[in-house]
Length: 159
Ligand code: ZN
Image (cartoon, rainbow, N blue to C red):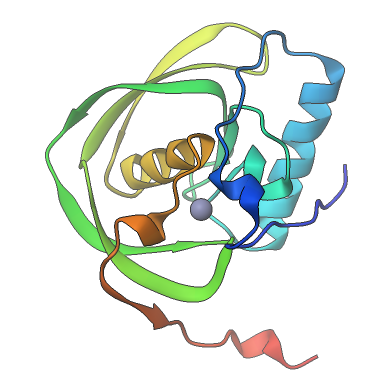
C-alpha cells in the first residue's frame, strides 16, 4: 500500500472521462488499496481514481460505516433532494453548498468481480453522487450554489 499523489483542481486529468474496468486484476486491487490509504490519510469521505491521476472508473467511500469500494459504479435510481455542504480533496480548504438526491441506488462491481446494488441515503447518497461525477470529469464546484467558502484550518496544521 502506498499514499498516492493527489491531483488538484486545474489539473486537466480531473476533467477527463474515466474508462471502465474490464477485469479486477492485481493492479486494480493495488490501486484500490492505495486509494483507501490516501483517502484515510487525507481524512476524506471519498476518493475517485482520477483524483490520484488514474482514469479508471473506481471510487472508494467511507462515511464512517467502513470502506466501500465501487468499480464501474452506475447510479440507476435517485429520489428526493438534500441541500448541504460539500468539499473535495482536489479542492482543498474550500466548501460549498450543493443540492443532491437524498437517496440513490448504485450498481457496481466489487473487488471480487461480482456485481452489487446498494441503496444510500443522506451523506452516503451525497458521497456516491460526488465521486461518480469525478468519473465523468465533473467537480462539485461546477454545481455549487453561491460562492465557495474557506474552511477552518485543522488544529494540527502547524508542523
Ligand atoms: Zn471530490
